[in-house]
Length: 156
Image 1: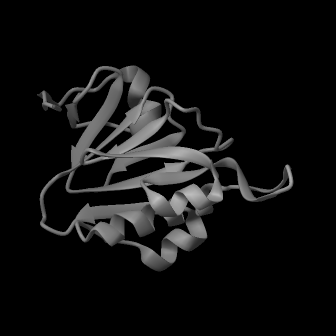
Image 2: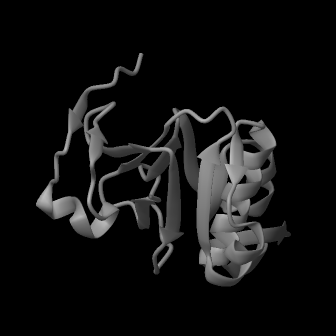
């Protein structure tokens, strides 16, 4: 069970580079860095290499990264740096992911739930920054594991 602990107007200097200025910081689980806002922006950073422990949480939905392309369709999975698109007779057809690949998959999965509104649809394809809010107007909570390669910022 996840519980929320809200600390208002709390800025952690080591996290400023990761989240920007955090006005509402909540830690829902040990070793997660979280923030709540009406809407947020998410931008992935190179080298787009994620380990098995790296995760992004959006209101409790856990997104992890996989290397097999067919896995993306079956759960809350996002592309990793190098994706295996096809495997035949021990040979692998691979492709490298970039921030546009990752953000497009994340936007699609969030929109498909019906709980999230993409605020910058056409723009996210060109700049790789996802801006999202909840359809019910409630605060959205974004959490990441330590060292997660994405910038998360509240949108005023």
